[in-house]
Length: 258
Image (cartoon, helix red, strand yellow):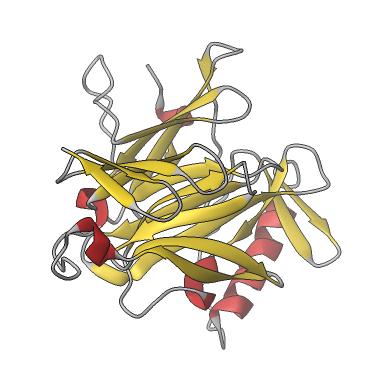
């Protein structure tokens, strides 16, 4: 069983029972670590089990007391906050040039309910997260590898450049065959292209192809109608749905299997 020192995120998981609840999401990363995730809406929680050490990873919170200082912008606030973290926790925080980086797994960008975890070829992590009732609290966050071993940098709200109006994002996956990110939302399946330091999206499958009359306003968050995506090559993939069984996309057409 994990203990309080293994808790990552801002969740409310109870350790009263002598067994783990069924997780809403599990993921095995490139280092054979098992991520066990719980979605509590406004709260996300993860326990990471290292299969090579047969133990859960410890986590140290790097929170700093807020002295109610006012800032002109969120960027100014984060700059000041990271500076304080660096000063107080030199083992867990490094600074190279103007960039702050954090020793894994501290400062994982877990804010709202986790819908998916995936990694790219470099080992960087991508999280799609969101509340079931708010498109404003829904998006993609990155935990990027750096030149420093075991240290990662954080990129928040990377969806701001490609997200459609009122878009609720569900599962995301990295396709190792074409080294691109794909995701599903209430507007369909999309492929992400790098656009400088950010992304642009391209529609792959319109949601109407999935037999939906229109976007389902109430079918957000943890009840997203597509729950998993698996690629077979650069274009073909299968996906699991809540309503129709599973689907298969051959690069041109979609077949649904009930």
